[in-house]
Amino acid sequence: MRTIYENYRGFKISKQESIYNAIQADGIVFSRWQLSQVLDTVDNYVEVMENSLSEDPQTDFPLN
Image 1 (cartoon, rainbow, N blue to C red):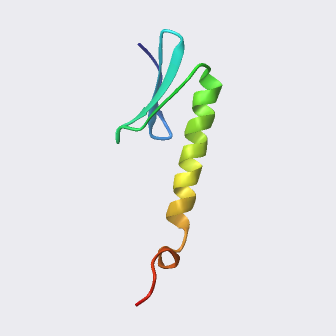
Image 2: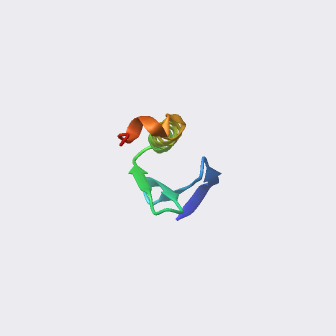
């Protein structure tokens, strides 16, 4: 396994044989055939997570 990036948006990017992997400390793993695909997947994941954290938390829970 060869490390490509130690910390790309919180993921370690590596290549094992012909597959690129993105691994986060929380156990989240993405595997793709091309480096650009795995980087795009990480970017999309991080953007979705950032957007979900920036939303108003009161809108997700009913008021009693």
